[in-house]
Picture 1 (tube, rainbow, N blue to C red):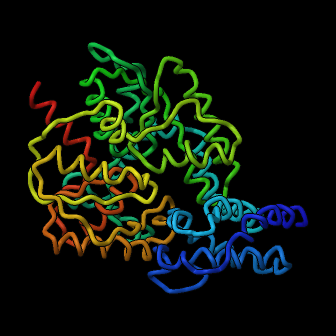
Picture 2: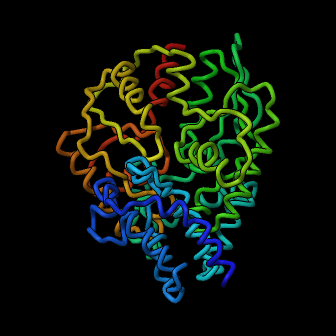
Picture 3: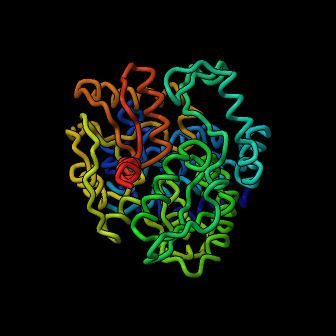
Length: 411
């Protein structure tokens, strides 16, 4: 126990930077829903400080409050003192998790997902069939499983074939100008495989050859969010080793901001290792590296949900992409808060997470939106569920799919 308290003490220097000013209150999505001090960063830091000051008997209760943090990093960006809240809460969860351990069955599922990626890919056909026969179809690609524990959640279809099975290896472009690696992440590999297809084929169209790893190793963020930080570190290192073999690639491309955050921003801080290549979001790559200018035929009334981990400095780029590459009438959302997916938060606290997405869907209905662009598969799953639940008949997709649809038409 003394060793654990010593590890918490190592966070003291970072925690003492918190001046308890409360600026984080206005940016914390969780605090906005309940107004509790234990929900906001300032309160969570005070709770952690109480543990190493001797109130160790409350460690389990404090872990519960830390566990409910969305890890959205909005408090990190808003803090005038530069408190590294994301690092504090990840380490805090790790230490307290050693006192209040994860149930064995949950840890087994997590280890399988983190450490057996080939098995996860091989199970895709079984999960695909299980979902179809154990669920009610709500609309194309959306099902409501008949499992009471899922609380009536609508889920996006798991594909019968993993994305890497079809695209694993080098996908050569005619008139090649460069090579990149596409890191699909778990959700694109097993669920939004059409996003992966769009990324690869659009890049090939513009002369970029694309390596796709034969095996998709999880970025590790699900493990980090559950307090299993060592499992996360191992996943990051395994990815760095796997990605380092692509010596002639210029960038790593991703279509998931959380994967980018896990591998490129938090990964080096937690492992001390460097990512072998710069990780770039697909829309940023198309705009800033390739200077792509294409006018697709997409029409209707559109909006964009910005994921919490999308780089703030690049959000205008996404808006410009939608405005200049489609004929849709873009309706900016007043509600720019978290959708409630937040890694494993939606799985653990589904009832709470529904409130986050419901308010967004209500605004989309008011604005008569029929197309929702989301550059993150996790957010897309959360808002597809909410749209089906709240009666919004809108397409939820990644902007790059519009480019791919257009390119297919003109070929």
